[in-house]
Amino acid sequence: MSGRVGESQSWRPEEYGANARFVADYGIDLIDDLNPLPGQRIVDIGCGDGYLSARIKARGCDVWGLDPSREMLAAAQAQGIHVIHADIADFTTDLRFNGAFSNAALHWVKDQQAALRNIRAMLEPGARFAGELGGHGNVAAIAVAANAVLGEFGIDGAALMPWRFPTVRAFAAMLQTAGFTVEAIKLTPRPTILPADMKAWLKTFCDWALAALPEEKRDDYLDRVEALLRPVLCDDAGVWTADYVRLRFLAAAV
Ligand code: BEZ
Image (tube, helix red, strand yellow):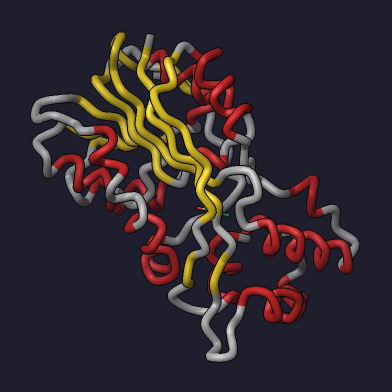
């Protein structure tokens, strides 16, 4: 195996479990799209704490989870998942897999074409790849607010933002270039009720923005982003709904 790992974001498994468990819950039925069979070796790209990897393992598969976060991988390993500490855009291995799975991870990868090429190289011909990521327009209001307020602090948020939310056309072309046949691909708006408030979401997913600010300015930043978003994403009962848009696909290695 070889590769380099450079994380754009830090993850804390306990915080993720409290504020973002819905991310994996929404991905459970993606396992049915993959339809992994007992005995198959499956790689979970961006496995995080292994919540979904463990469900694939429960179907009798030999599951390997790949992730750039050592903290999250430790949680996956504790559930009996083989782990690979790597950045998928910069990773090669002699291991070969019968299927690949990825939920809510590929939008963190800047070079998605390289990631898809490396995933294809890990797969046997005919192996399926089922995945979901944020698609074009995902968390658009949040992204605009997060960047606008960074601008108020003199920081170029667009240059820092690690997210890549592709269109169907761009992602399908990337899959084909990487050596996949696209069997299904669809963009679906999915307004998502948050388990806590917007600040909790920002603390979990916008570490890249908070880390660019001096510690004493972070609360002010969170207050200002939340104030911008309240009129559009918070209802009169105080419930926050994030403007998620998902891109889901099923592909097969040529
Ligand atoms: C998502 O899963 O859609 C997502 C994750 C992190 C940042 C933005 C969106």
